Amino acid sequence: MNGSPKRIGVLGAGSFGTALAVHLAGAGGHPVQLWGRDPVLARRMAADRTNSEYLPDVELPDGIQPTSDMADLAGSEILLVAAPSHGFREVLRQFLRQHPDGSPLPLVSATKGIEPETLARMSQVAFEEGMAADREIRYAVLSGPTFAAELARNVPSAAVIASEDAVFATEVREVLSTPLLRLYSSSDVVGVELGATTKNVIAIAAGALSGMGLGHNTLAALITRGLHEITRLGIACGGQPRTFAGLAGLGDLVLTCTGGLSRNRRIGLDLAAGRSVAEITGETHMVAEGVRNSIAISRLAAQRGVEMPITQQMVAVLYHGKDPRKAVEELMTRGLKSETEL
Image (tube, rainbow, N blue to C red; front, side, top):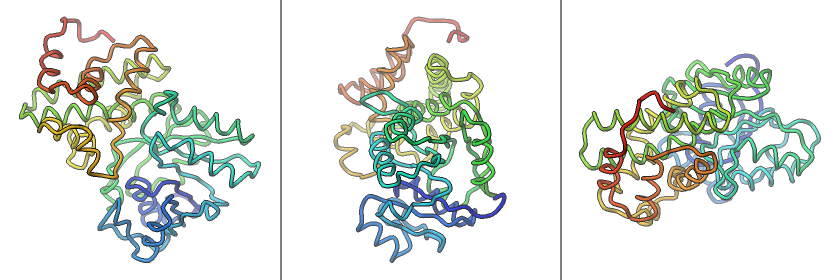
């Protein structure tokens, strides 16, 4: 951590929002207000000093104040939003209504997804809501290979802070970095946001491959070609090619495709075992962004004229009952091409 502690607000008491709060209050020494929409859960977290619903077995440091009242986040010097992509807009809108202060709002998104209905990235949602509320928003996005449980346990990690405002990116990087969380700054908001979104779909496919008992050859091929898909879409939307070889691209993709803590990978394993999406998602309150975002990404790719065969196959598996083995067969027998084609 650099400089004096800052008052940090976290909107979203799911696993990643809670992990950020735990890390920033513990390793970072910042006072953190952790907001969750469920008053019962907030009271339980305050009393038990743990989030048994989303991050069990992790103690909440004294510097965290759980709350279900957004008024408690007034005066936050940095506001982190860790809501699911389908709920990001409403959470931000509610905050802006409750805090009509005219000063610029320093907002950092930790959401990995795009809005299903509009296909808007979270930076675009924030801009629209800021305009509607007549409030300037200083926006940055945080992304990288960071499992919530490991971040909360202070496992050394690295991630990226991206903002079109270079000064703000540097400010956030300096404030949120800790001896155990190394942050790099970037100007490529588009690339970082799309890398974070699309890797979840590839991770479901990776889980399905592992669940079918296919080997490391197959998994390595999937990750590599998945990165091509991510890069194609990112560039078509205005992202910078180098971003996808970095922490928010390749780094996050490898972690999510291979790590045992990956919810998206777990869904793929269950699909390979013959379970339906309804069965899998009905058993947990945790959000696996790849399921919902697979369709949104496929639609965005169609709009941009981008070929994403792995994503298209996963939409068919998730929503149309296609056998994952048939999807692999069709991917392997596609027309041959040069590897360097994007």
